[in-house]
Amino acid sequence: MDYSEDSHNFYLNEQNKKKRKELEEKYGADYHKVNEETPPEIESQFLDNIKKFEEQWENAETKKVIEILGNPHFKKLEEIKPEELSGEIDKVLEIYNQHQINIDALDEVTEEDFYRFLTEELPQHETTFIQIEGMTTNYIYEEFHPSNKLDAKQSIEDFLLGILNNAKKDFLIRQGGWISKEKLMDSDGTPISLDDFITKSRSLFFGLPSGIKKVEEREINFIDFDFGEKNLVDVDLKLRYKMGHSARGSKPAVAGSNIIEKLFRFRFELERSEYGGFDIVRYELRK
Image 1 (tube, helix red, strand yellow):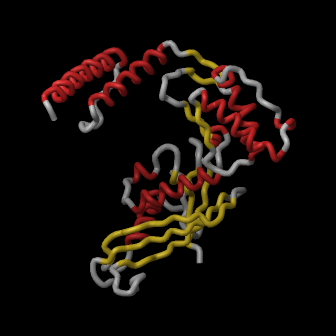
Image 2: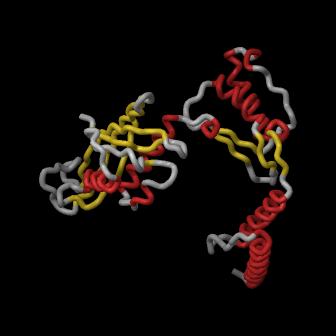
């Protein structure tokens, strides 16, 4: 680095300090430097964008999405031939994209339902209008139409990974899901306390031969969903354990290796959470 570059970076760093202080004093947030390796030019641009956002937010208007799009005319679904619908969806998405709005669907949705969402439902949604170059607004279909499958997957995945990572109880029952706080049952339907439920779940994965050292890999596969009076989800969890020394009663997955595999085949019963999503009520091991 030559002296001119060194001086330039010193100047930018000093300017960035002033920008952070100004933002903190005016808007009351801590805009400390997140990464010491971030080039001062990038941080300067980042701080400038924050300032623009804060300034616009103070005077932001509430608008319908259709107004932000410039009040375009969308074809009615019944006016579109089935073979042309995919192309029409692309045209509508391009209109959104031109106004820095991205839209996605995480689960399966029919083209008809997605087109109605894009041209009838979302356009009437009111939002705080802020437009900054390079900044996008993002909408997900499932925010408006929750998916049972996605909600169930999230609760079960977070629970299993939380148990495998030896997460604290407060993490496993935090607001929004994963474990029911009051209606927990053992596999045979007998009421069970929260502490016992967590302890039993931990012992399922870690109460293994003494030669087991740690979980090396994990793979979660969702097999079947049945939503109704009881919300049941079948899940296979494959764990690959690393052996510290020979584990009696367990055979290596590959001859001569120090890795063994175990397959846990679960059936989870879920209930709707008051906060949205699902809570786990009980589980049993499938044969």
